[in-house]
Image (cartoon, rainbow over all chains, first blue to last red):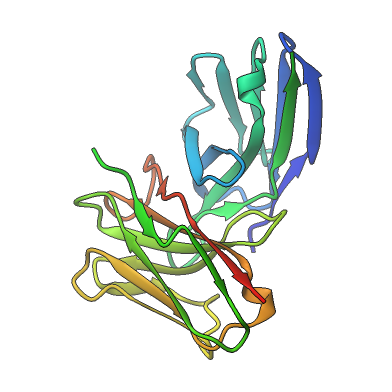
Length: 114
Length: 116
């Protein structure tokens, strides 16, 4: 059964700092690894999706990497801003299940101070 | 294009009452998911539909939860009777086809349920 873990659970940084959020998963048989952002009281916004055949994806100041052999993904945020404050969720879509639902970690809550 | 729509946004009920949530996925999306997100946790799948058929409902508490997607478009999730532990955010998501390689899931804003 696929399990997804995110470390750290919470992170506080000053504005301008580069940071890395970590995600690990137990079963490497996945279709995709997806990173989401969740603002308080809001739904989930997709940030980046990495297919199992890919190593990384980039969007603006965000870069996500995938290492299936070690069961790890990282989300790198460059030059952090107060507007980046949110909870970041990592999710894997396992191949070995009935459907294509995502298995989520508990998230990392990021606070960027100005 | 319009995103995933959900209503109501908030609901407060007493235990043992019933409640229903509605979801309209992105137009043309074949696959629809309902997730439950308890405070401090990541979302957990309740049920997945592809068109109007159920793909996975293995984690749906069928003694109290039911869901339908009769015409393969919008969907309703019902809880009857509600328990205190059902307090959570109920998220609806959709995929264009089956949700396989390279397919992003798009989420609605969620319905926040509080059971007193």
